[in-house]
Image (cartoon, rainbow, N blue to C red; front, side, top):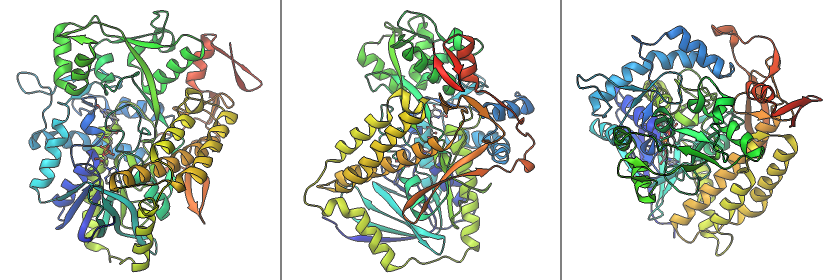
Length: 581
Ligand SMILES: Cc1cc2nc3c(=O)[nH]c(=O)nc-3n(C[C@H](O)[C@H](O)[C@H](O)COP(=O)(O)OP(=O)(O)OC[C@H]3O[C@@H](n4cnc5c(N)ncnc54)[C@H](O)[C@@H]3O)c2cc1C
């Protein structure tokens, strides 16, 4: 089944053709790298989360927004667990990048006199709207125009290393099974994160492959305990759009028809950030008030027409489902949280986005973003981090003495990659995936956390890791991809649950019933994992607050989600734990 071998050489190798990868490739060229190769498991510009994005990016407007207020709010929203130097860098870059993208032909919603239209969403500052998949198409095209060689339908499986330096990567063609070796002076990893193949479109291709490859190669992986849960239409694969829906006035209702966000978040209501919205949904369900619905039946035809321009794919799905007829939503739509997203965890990087492995840069959803809300994450964070990583990788590619991998290493990685294909029979990868989803999906595992429930989930994940995943069988390169993706998702869940159990407090996106206090004395730290002699070592790492303008107050206080729930008499605190009313 394994076909030929193809060897490629580059100055900068970019793994991933999404939001971060396209910017990295464009900037690597702009900063003088001669040979830039971009590899994507799907198709550069067509298969990323960003392609199926909800139509908005959160842009800081230097002439309209108050920098100090925004900076302070972002740091406080992240409960201080974010890299403030990278935040400063992000805010300094973002406006220039948006203007550049305008020049690349990215279409934004504009006023008749050409100004960017800003629209409220869940973010703390209003968003800029782009036109669905057109944005990523334009960025991938710009990369090609500048001479980036894009190789599609090749799945990167492992990194090549020598003495702690990265020499490139390996992978295989998911259609014909060819083995690919990529030798490169520097490598930028931009393979996104995951939603464990849940409902959002685009999420089935991002399976933490990069996180796992970096972990196996020895990088420190941080913040995997911080799982962000999004929320989407229940039962149907409609796609994203919540920013636009709630920004246009969509209202979440519980089964009794109550607009419950009036209680949980009277200031922001349905436009609250996910770390408020999703636990509120889970608490309503925990109290017997589920299911949850989104009501958009009051939207005007003009508002529906704008949704059709900004999120064309979800709006087509709504039409097909009959939830939207012509220019009118005709039904309330059932809504539910997704599987955990791992896009807030990733390799620890410095301000140039270089990882602890020399020559390896990580960017976009493959680096920790701390879970902070509207203003500096997701697509816009992928753009700035990708651009910075591409620039720095191009500069380093000229200075670095490249290392060559050994033939033995390449052969070992080839054997590891093709193992499921060589087996004559075994377990179907979908069986492993469904078992994993069942272990981690329940809302009381990672949305509302507690030690014994997380331990039970971890035991199941370890059982899947040891007793199912090693026996997966693939009859062709397509199924091999499915098997490797399932394997990577199991490792990612293992990292997440071990990290979540390690943190003994509650902090934005990570609320624990057994540790309901936010403990700034002990826990303003990244929780990290690292491979250590075949075992997963978990440890905490301090942030360099001596270099940051904002320092956390030394205090231990009820985490804001729990505080609000206590004020509403939904919970009480007894013997240091949450007691449900
Ligand atoms: C449905 C949905 C809607 C969203 N909407 C918005 C929005 O409106 N605004 C916003 O700011 N954020 C949004 N987000 C989040 C945002 O899209 C991501 O944070 C952002 O795209 C991350 O950029 P990235 O480059 O790291 O990953 P992506 O843009 O997802 O790109 C990753 C790329 O890597 C490729 N890849 C993955 N694994 C491999 C491998 N092994 N080998 C080779 N290639 C590989 C994939 O094919 C993909 O092209 C949304 C996310 C989802 C899931």
